Length: 131
Image (cartoon, rainbow, N blue to C red; front, top):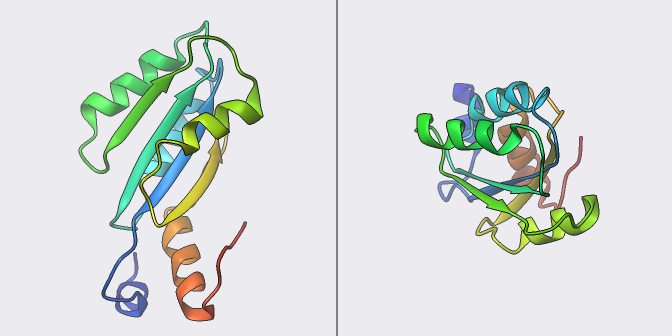
């Protein structure tokens, strides 16, 4: 986060829950996780909900969970395949954040995505942003 962005955020830095619904995303998910763990925003939790993947998606998620100390990460695995929408709904149940950021397993985020959105919310007294 740039010095200006840090100084512009309110003293009470809200928790942002990043919600990722996964399903057979092994070929994409490393890049997305790298971009999430590279965020410059200081107060993030990562919630991953896997929809009964048959590839190595869950193994990759678990590797990141074990090796990264940047942000806490929780992984939940569905007992059956719920489909895209229900999988996101399931993940939302575990969020503790003041704000929620949705991501797909094949997204790649700029390092200042979360900080830019929170700054915009605070500056404009908005309820939501999108990009």
